[in-house]
Image (tube, rainbow, N blue to C red; front, side, top):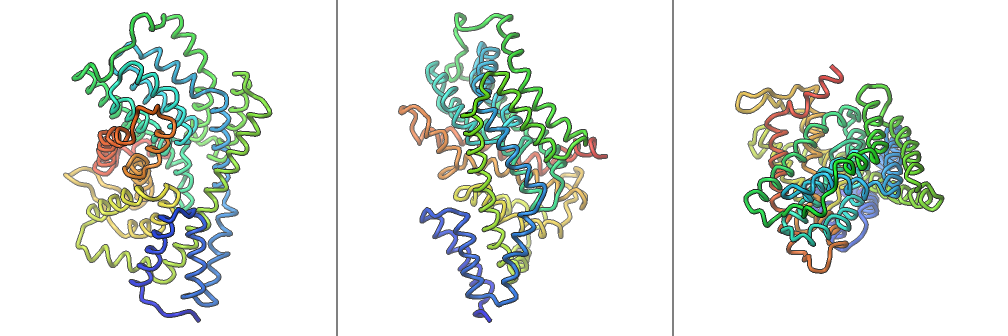
Length: 454
């Protein structure tokens, strides 16, 4: 029999020790799993040890999770096929003649890459190496140059095929296909907001984003050639998402099709080599292993907390604030943004969502300002997309947003960390606007899934 402890002190001990160990630089997967085992030993009993196999085994055998390594391999293979460079080259030569054209090109290329890859680190680093020097050479303002790369790169966490959507669906027992479809319009809205901001800022202040000189612009014939060169990878994305949206294949089956298609695209671009396949496979193994270990560790950690009454404690604490459903939702969004400053998205998902989802299902969201609300059946889908929009903010939230450091790692020496921090703020505000749109107008999320699934 373990030691007796009040749930308040258990909460302080568990999450306080988690924060201390993470700040000490220890890996999240081993911190959460290790702490779960320590607290099970100290405060659990023999029966509670059943948490270990009962929570891990269903995840190890979950069919939907097999889409993760397939989509990661697809992204890695397309990256090694040179698709990111060619896609940016195509878009910036077509739009470079506009004010702010290079930044707009970066956002459009990042939106398309999100649908191809969904790997934020790869997009941020590659765009930082290609697009940032090009914009600096043409005297773009740091806010526009750095901000467009930061914000555009985060779209990979929202636009399908999103790895976050797959994990959320498994944790919340939600349809992956519905989450994919529900995230499409919010993703395009955010991309549109970024483009609108860049276009407006460079119109008001032309020196912030001068167009390409006439001698650097290309002919219509060359633009058509560039478009034709990108036909295969764009067709692959349309095929993968199309067979999911049409209900022809599950996300796992579509990921298999996409993996084979990525090999074909690499062959067409003369990049299908043993070294590239081996490198993509190692990247896939490393990222998948990291994600799965975090899943196992965080699931044990949260499982122990919930079994000891943590869920009821959180529910009662939030109910005690006297906030209505939308007030509680805003409080959750603030907590997620704060967590995003210190944890990665996998850890936040596995620590917060298992506690938030049951609480959300007890509430009724009837709409604000007389607008349509959300039915109980559609609530997990709506909250899932709202959560994914919020997670974009975590990537560019100072001081520890991952995208900020991805960009700094490849930025020229003259681009300071302070400039990168400042450049993220307008786009962080736009992401907050996008989040508010999804909350106030739930039809933005729910309309397309209704059209597809009835």
